[in-house]
Length: 112
Image 1: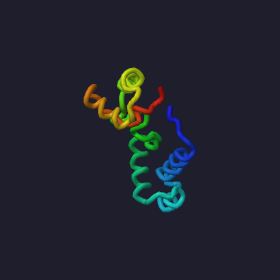
Image 2: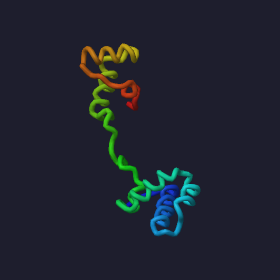
Image 3: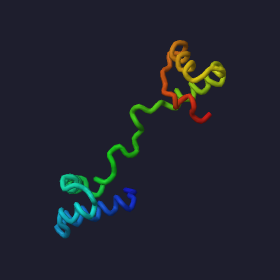
Image 4: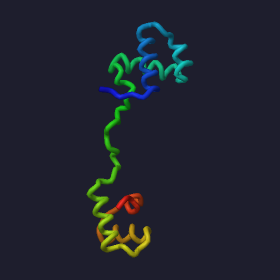
């Protein structure tokens, strides 16, 4: 099952009509406010994948640079128990030298 918002549904409907020859590409360019090349790409993807072409291919995937939850919990535990009285800059240096952990600043201030 594909869940689409109204904008994606409009794109699917219009591209389907272009594919059937009911609407011209020029009218579609104006209607969707996209370039001719983009409409042609949409049409090509529609012919290959059907209505799934509007769903981004990364939908449902976690980012490759996401910090694992176990590492976040470990850092937050260290902050509570061992490094509770240091500022963020010093914390980053201590984690790097003592614990061999390099994480982004958002991990330090995340929900506890």
